[in-house]
Picture 1 (cartoon, rainbow, N blue to C red):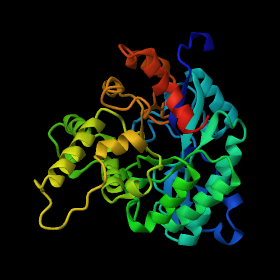
Picture 2: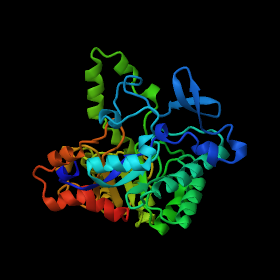
Picture 3: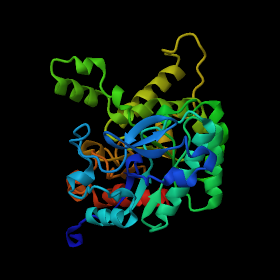
Picture 4: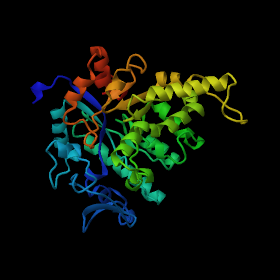
Length: 386
């Protein structure tokens, strides 16, 4: 199989999901006084499920498309989902899957479904326990398994403390905040000390997409539409998933966070590409009109950043994508050639695994070899110091 691989690549967006985590992760690593309320796996009439603070959440382990929404996870589609096996968190098996797809290294984001833990002390210890487990997991092959530490989206002070703790421990390459769900918003002044530390230690900060809670994935209009497929497909085309990062990114630019911290590195993870030029153009036009007095902001004073929004994208914002052939063709003309990275999204249903080679080949039609190497390998290698 390896002899057929044309493109070795670095996947800048893969995952370690709650479903595949060891069931004893928190029962073994939390302080004893918190274990009873902390995350644990409990069997019920439907199977094994994660529970914490007395509530039941997502399933654990083997769970087929037929059992769930109908969306087939990549490892099921690829014929390697087996009952009783936590393949994505078994290092040897995960590395085997990477070899099958041609991935030299994998940037692995944690659960994208926010873990709603009410108690602040328990929540803090859960973040710490996960990040410590992640370091241990990546130690099996640290040059290939690149874990992305998960930071609190609810507690800026703790996010800063955890970033500091991990940086002092050493080996940290990337961290993630589910910015679209952050409260307070990531551009609130409560986050200022976090941004100061992130700039100081020079660690890229990821804003990965957050998964919508299942009950809110379909709005009332979809459910009542004359043609369900047309309704959902139209909304997907109108509102690409990455658009949830529009407000956090606009906030960082227009509140001056990126002016105050010009060496910050931000990653819009799994945001996609093709919609981003429209976003950048819209922000630039609004900036120019406001600066020139053609304001659409009402009577309140408008404080503008020092540069055009597009200049911040040139300077300090990276974007990763999964399958975006039109967006790829914009790289080197509209999108910066040094700021775009491919990710296979393993093991999610939307993943290109185990067919990333075919996706890369199709995406690269008409794209020069030097741009191809940057998108699929060199940009991730440089940003994450692989």
